[in-house]
Length: 141
Ligand code: SF4
Image 1: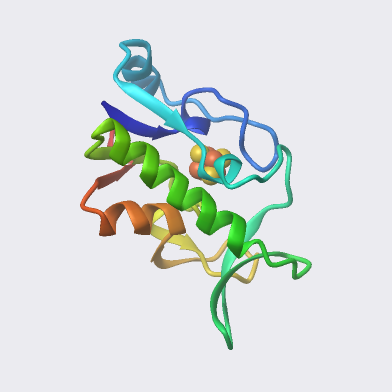
Image 2: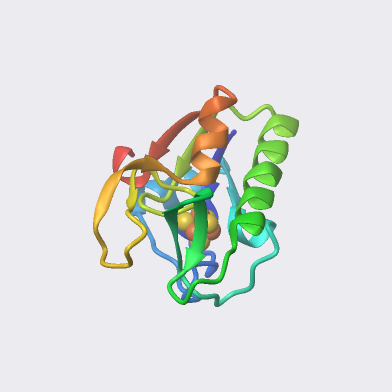
């Protein structure tokens, strides 16, 4: 089985209450090959919710809303829960939504809320990679 960001297979769990759809990924889902997971919901955040970005602060990286609310704990909890589910199901590969502060792998927004991309990973993608799980983006499928 392969984990997938739930918003990539039609679950309306994004911060704005929407989903995105990729035909190739939906096909795998319909074949029963994907386990949908949303780290931010697993971390206890609501739908909809204020969008967040990873911000570099004097105390290190934090996940913040644009108005300065610190959501780091929920993002860490969601990443840990996602890893727990992956481990319990023996999942070795994940298809995660690019650019997200949770799921993004390779590129994320830079914390200025100007849609500027920098190299980096979201917290969940980072944790899965550290655990040896292969992480792909939706455009790799
Ligand atoms: Fe999609 Fe991941 Fe964001 Fe959930 S946390 S909405 S799965 S990108």
